[in-house]
Image (tube, rainbow, N blue to C red; front, side):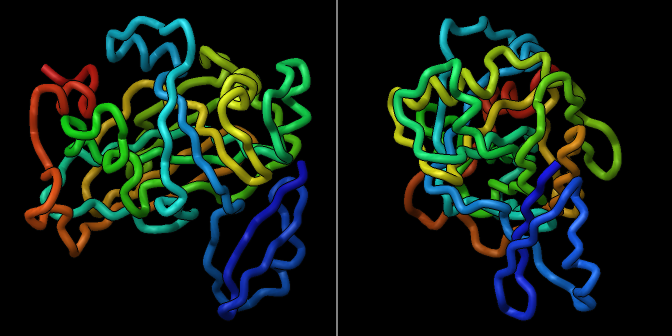
Length: 269
């Protein structure tokens, strides 16, 4: 499979092209390098609920059409990047996902031709700061858009078939989410076709395709990995933030029954 990896080496950005995750250029790199997100999107759209296990866990009825929210591009993070949990917050949840990467301008596309507009796929972890769920229920701006909460990578895989692939999330090497892409309600092609009726997508833009059941909060010091069959492993470490989001302006982190019911899922009693 053809893959793309973006890195920073000696303060320079390099784009590496490989096959099956093997990059010949890396063999000639002796010093350490930093991963970058494999693409630079201008828009990130996320589907709310797209795995049947997640619907069942939250006791939700399948909507007749997908519903979506946006993540700002400023929250994009990379493989091995640190995920910051701001002081005063305790409901930072992981959500292992697959990200569709758009390959060319897409507007009002035909569902049967949707595959022609997909450049490839990468791994995502759609972290959510549910401490702000009560105030952000309809926008998710702080919940899903806070800085560092959008890691993607490590590679863009351009000829990957998403059908019947395993997806797992690990916290400190313990499996905490496990499912199969066949359990998606709406296919990536469906999501792209639907959204292209409203949004003009450009090359590199991203659609996050949903998470399975068992999204739960994680604490600073935790190492979270998302593994997708034939896509690789996305790894991030949770760290405690320095600056608080509560400075006398706007919403403050909260703890409520509603927040716990979302953050803790079926563990909430």
